[in-house]
Amino acid sequence: MIDQLVDIDFWNKKLKYKTPDAIIDWALKLSEKRIVTTSFGKYSAVLLSTFFRKDKDISVIWCDTGYNIPETYAHAIDLMDKFNLNVHTYLPLQSKAFTDYTLGSPDVEDPNHEKFTEIVKLEPFKRALKEHAPDVWFTNIRVRQTELRESLDILSYSKDGILKVSPFYYWTDAELDVHLKEYGLPKNSTYYDPVKALSHRECGIHLQ
Image 1: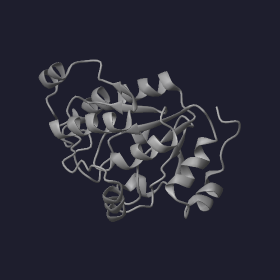
Image 2: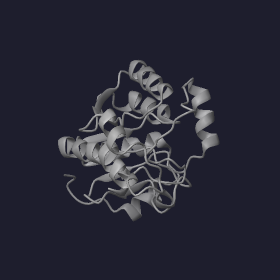
Image 3: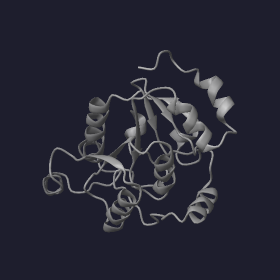
Image 4: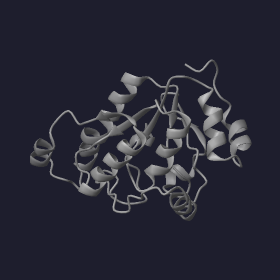
């Protein structure tokens, strides 16, 4: 564990106008037990390419639901190869075929959607956290994405007391697009998560 709890109110004020690189440099000093999560979504190349420069060996946690579209798998393979990512992939304990048969792909209004979310996303993620036991968790969440994320900041704590660090928290889509273009990074424009389904909904892991 981190020697003492980080005063996130104090540090959120200190870090608000720092660059993502400076935020990451600060957070890397807190603990060797750290992870970065990715869904290989729309702007995943931004954070992952940054860690290629900062900490090539960091454990990259990917909870592959099995429901990604082909373009997302192609994007994931491209980034894995490009940045030699230390990816730890976590899959549901039951096959996609079994889930399809028993639950189908329930929409967000379906009572089975909560069970679907637990099977394909939350259980694999809880397993990842148990196995890696991180003190610091780097994420790519940003303000304005969902009601929950609007209430957070660069630093926040998970329910289990893991310090979550979101270096690009205050960046807009337009700023990320400029960054992608400047560094020649790919954008996964067609990304779709059936767990999240709607752009303003949470996929679930940030409720943990």
